[in-house]
Length: 400
Image (cartoon, rainbow, N blue to C red):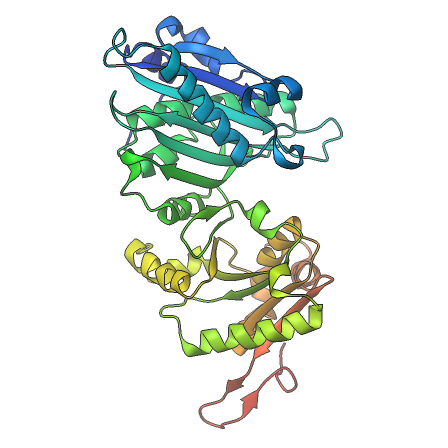
């Protein structure tokens, strides 16, 4: 168990380390992170430069233009990190600064708007060295703000930035602790982290899929997505304006029934929705409750499952959606396209069981309103009763 420190204590610890030296580039919510370091004292030995390129023209002159004029993107953040590190290397002599570990911290965010119709989100990252002569490492995260006030969101962003910088230098050898420490002095209700990516020599042993699992496991987000190559993906990027077809299961192991359900259900969905494969995101969903079926989560077992699904070419979503309606509600926040779900008879019977909706004021009717929304279809996989040999499907299945 690590010792939790306040942002001021963390900033002062970094400032008092003569080997840590770098820059801060913050776009979109003020210089909320660097002010902690200025206030803590002793910042002159840590901060090489602090800047906030608010104006788009000036920002473009430094980092280059962005496609479609989108500035709150992962690509923009990584450009900022690498450009600022290259400036340090170019302008600061290694000979005159022995044992210095350089870093660049950056964020590009948008906080809640005046009408409160956009909640606010952004990208936060650090590029840093563990040792003077080693290659650089990067930690990049995507955040969504839940607070209903721009000033509060800025405060949260500042604390998060300090936690990330401190964690990079003090917990790089324990990424799980690093992830946990990101919420020091931040309430989980105020901030969601729905993607994290570690890269570089210090994280050569880190599997980012396991790091994604930590986000859901620690209730930092409701769902994470990674593609068949094992790369963490931002859910908003993957699902935006797409048709979605999903299959939930344990996939322990992946069976021929799983594949048959998916392929036949997908074929029917594409016909019903009159859409193509390119317009559709196919997702394999595994819930945390499923992973915890035998007690605590077995990470080796988890990796074995997703490795097989990846080799079969599938995109995987890990969620804490124990009820189907929560999964559909989540998809609907990212797309207005068609949604299809393939499921077996047992799961369909559970959908109609009212005990799963006791937590909803509107009960099963509220759940069904979210589940059976416009453009959503269920594809029921038939079941053969082993005793009566009766084939149950949507035409003869009796529900509550």
